[in-house]
Image (cartoon, rainbow, N blue to C red; front, side):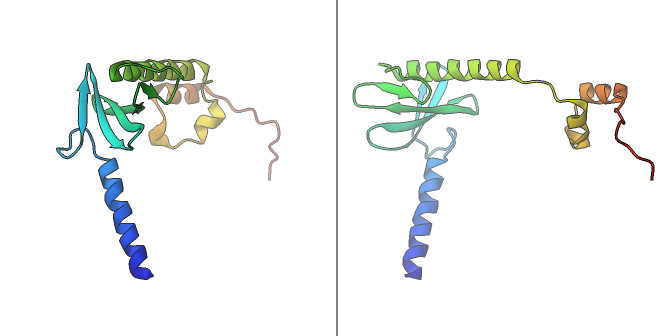
Length: 139
């Protein structure tokens, strides 16, 4: 039984290696379309592709028998480029909405960060910060 487990583990590791191939790998099955690289991951129907712009993966799209789709909307696309563009646009909007809805960290939260993680603006805010010492008791 130990032999079977090690064989299964080896097969899993080999399949993970194939799935995680970057678009620059010569063994990767890559489809280049209008500013995107689609890297085949696996599957028969649907076939799964990771979508890259430059060197960044933006998500996954799926090739069905009659159409293409992505993981973010319910639209059926006729071309892979349309599914990739739809995914890309969704991700850009999601980044913008996340940035606009996030509140800046409070000075108390900045004090909990590592020094190397603080930006110049964070340091400037901390220089001006005067903590409220309502509950301090002299020892």
